[in-house]
Length: 154
Ligand SMILES: [Zn+2]
Image (cartoon, rainbow, N blue to C red; front, side, top):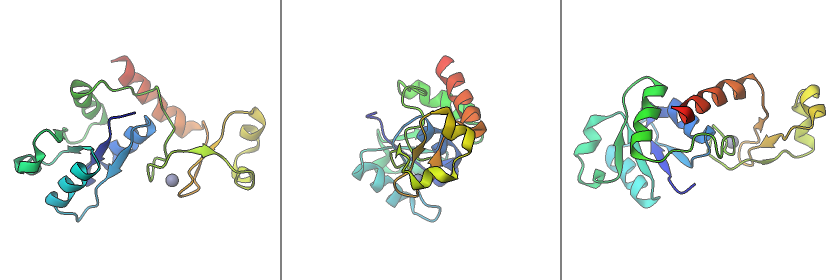
């Protein structure tokens, strides 16, 4: 996917959903100045997503920032749909929700921590090469996927 995002710290929860959808999404730190956040967006070619109205007033924000509403994930997704041709499900669950790294097939030793029924089902189990977290289609996955499907259909 070509469109890359940088979420401000207030949008941490939404950033996880963008990553779940497969979008390359960075998350700005809590204490980072607006100026720095904007610089990161420009340097890395990312759209800055923010719920902070102040940041729009910066000169560097021009054509680089999309304002999202506070609170509801559904409302935030809707606004993003108005700005971009979002594909919420095409690349779903290809990135780590925590650190944005692209997932790879799980290594044999780390397969040990996966529930036996999942191991035996033959489904693809993925792993983050950075934090080593393991991903499979459990209940958490189904909940997030359900929401992404809704956004795709809307
Ligand atoms: Zn990770």
